[in-house]
Length: 216
Ligand code: GRF
Image 1: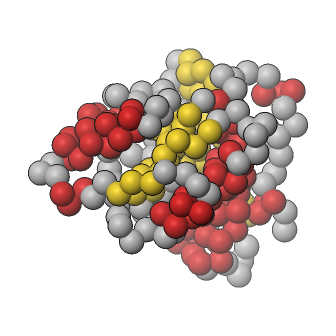
Image 2: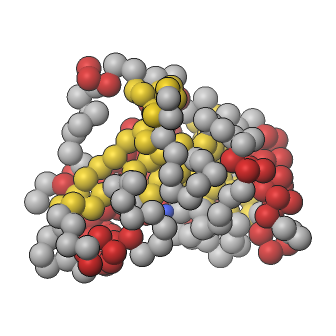
């Protein structure tokens, strides 16, 4: 299965996916990495991995649908079957979401449905939550919603601030994004009644394995 990555920034999740896909035994191959920002650090990471890159600048388009059609054109031209959003900081409208329904994943640094949107780590700390974490989910029209494929929980330590917590959550992000991509590429994930069901999940030792970042 060929996948494409959409990103806007430093690209550590992109790196995790490209590192995993560099293994010939991995069931998905990276076909293209597209940023909406020409200064995104992830562009260098993709180039170093030998993956084609493109910049599709949202500011060059009159509206969101026009921008999103351009993204889809690039993805299709690269033969992409599955889109992975990895720190892609643009809201996507039904023009994109409907086109890639069931074929686009996003990662969000919270245990959804808690704390969608920005500033998740500080909000989790302020709420006195004992666990933070990360979620990989299918893209849906509603932001940071959509059927959940994988999660990693990370304890919130009494000494944490948003920066220290984000760093630990990020380790979990990298683990579960690779895991979720593998499951989808293996054809083991189906959407049933609005939930993502993973075939043979109970036989998969990795299904409930705590992320490295969860071990305090
Ligand atoms: C990650 O925390 C991701 O969950 C969020 O944006 C951040 C991107 O980080 N949506 P990186 O660019 O993958 O390093």
